[in-house]
Image 1 (cartoon, rainbow, N blue to C red):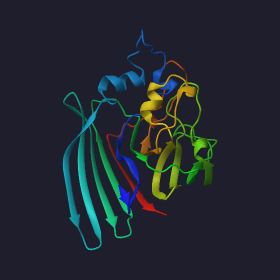
Image 2 (image 1 turned 135 degrees about the vertical axis):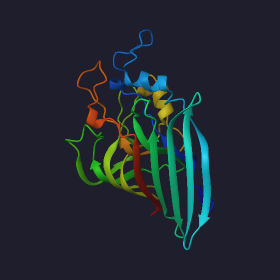
Image 3 (image 1 turned 90 degrees about the horizontal axis):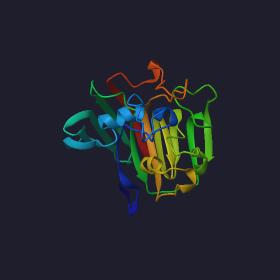
Length: 256
């Protein structure tokens, strides 16, 4: 993705259904004693972390004042389809892009951690500005202390430095996000930092993390709760699990 001669993305915008495991996702599961009921083990066994996208459809049409791109992908593991994601990208002459996403989840796969999109932005900006819940991280079942307002924080403050690297820094109820030259509008959750999900999963302690090129952005239409009623069972309440089977969300992406 380019604007003029400036590269905007280091990796393409793509679906994301996983998160770097939280302590609550792992529970009592250990390398030498796996708990098959732990969320992370269920996701691994089902292939959520290993799934790859197969292109089913890609068309482009020129309408009166816009270009309409339609895509469909099947996310598969070992020949089994776990998710089907259908998207439309409506791009006008000003560069504003409206993204509609419809996701179908296989009935026999574990409820996913998230239904969203991820990409690696080329820019590294000093601050993040958003209209939504904050200022601290908040999750669908951890919203009580969060306030809805216009927030502006350094990029470094969007990362929560847990000793054991994991999913972190989500901000829910977001209506607008501004970062560098970009603006996103809609009703979504997001996290943004210099660390990819892959690095968070593979790093044992926070002091071993290293800032990557650009900035990693995750935008979720839906995100599972984090649970924590106790520290040994998969205790995310049913109302905070992504069990609906079909999901729809919409984003507007433009330049400020």
